[in-house]
Length: 407
Image 1 (cartoon, rainbow, N blue to C red):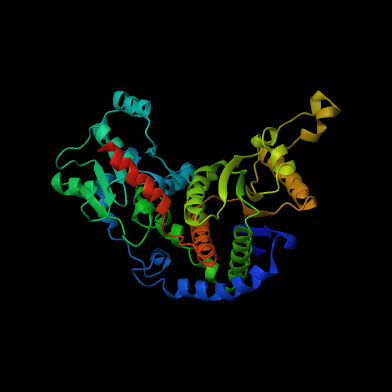
Image 2: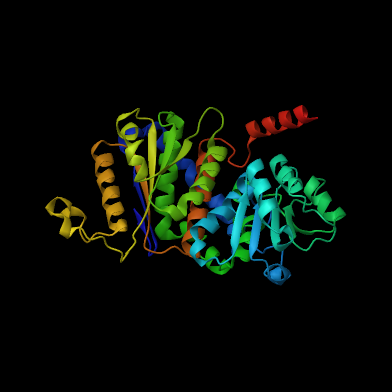
């Protein structure tokens, strides 16, 4: 177990699910891989350079002063281009005073509704695509009919290449920020892709970056190593195919969708990988828990919860002794008891799980730490499992076929 003031991380993956033949080889490779990642952070071409203290954004905050007047913001993108920003918004929404809307699918009714109900000239649009040619992003951008020369309410984030978005920004003289070539979409949340929307949300960027390297510090190294070895072991033996996120914290909902893409797209290759699924609990106790506990033993569970001292209590004393167990309890207390009851069952039945407990605070520092932890762990597991965590060749084939069929 690794503990700090704000997050508690735990692993409960039983030895019987781990093969010693894998452990020895994986352990030998781990130190080499993690050391290489840490030593390369300061190199600007490294995929993890955004974790470095020497990392510099390719924009100046003062350049965005002219956009701060907008109270309504629409972010257009797909996958890693938008999930990180959406996760930041969901996690810190109590601090955000502006209205944000995210277009991350093809939804004709949503497009019609926004065009009818809103004055589009008073909305700031942030359009994001690493390649600049993501079909769904281009479709939504064009469908809204907002592209005008010298427009003052459009920000485009893409690579500086011959992609449509960069060409449009040059031709129409739109505000453009370069997307880093060496950082893939699902790893880009702490670069301009996620940070520019966060800046316009009013998020404290120094705090968001404060704990990014905490996992390489002495007290945290052991947990990262243990976790990476155990997860690689499970992936390689192919017995555990499903990874279930049990989420007790509504503010983490979009973070888990970001995490779903990160794990699925980074590790799902060469016939191995986990299928990450998001399960809202305790709601899903009443629909899926029977299968989770008594169905096929092919699942590992990640439990996300929070210590929350909520003063709101319910009173049931006047309704008789049968309801006494609820008296003077808060919703957060009941959730915590439900989680603890589930943990007891998981342990008793030797069902593997991990726990991520936030200690009573939702802030930028916590979120930055979560982002960096899962990106580092996922990349290390990929390298240990002999897959490239930074590409997505099967997805590229679908994109090629789509373009061919559209022509």
